[in-house]
Image (cartoon, rainbow, N blue to C red; front, side, top):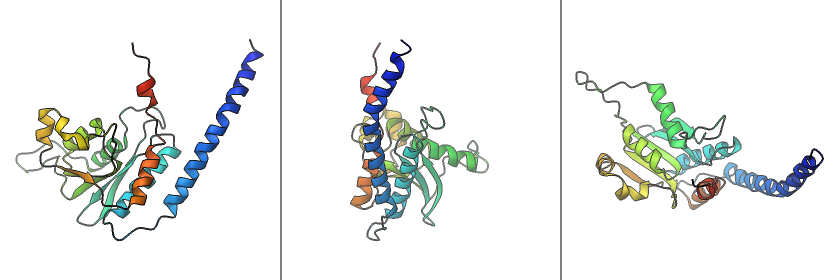
Length: 215
């Protein structure tokens, strides 16, 4: 048995190496496309779309899903917070999609408190803030965004299998009503950036959902 194990390991290594090498080559080519991309002034969201695409690339490098996100202050056009998928790095966290990571960082930094009737302060007051994400938010992230008070969400590419922003009518009644004054729409960016966001997202695997053992 001890003699067999090294042979099995060698066979697995030989079989997997071409696939890993091909994946690395694809990622290197995609990284080159991203780093060499020149912002297109015809699209008002191009700069922020590129920022979240770069975040998605960093997520993949760290072994997580290829999605990035940021918060933009529309009064200045500046990015005030970044987030990216950290689901598998440094350890498994099922909640740390890019939008969840982004809002965690923002809310931990600004430290808002419970609504105060005397001062009029509202923790869900996110005036001038727009959330930009490289991929349409999933149901978990969408309800978190709605609860955060963010009014506008821009996504670089749709998630046709798992996205929720394009399926608002399927939300439970409470969440549909809560989201009634929110806007969810595609970012105004180039087709090249959309393809980059999609290619990065495609590095993420959802096979665990389809191939899991159902008990």
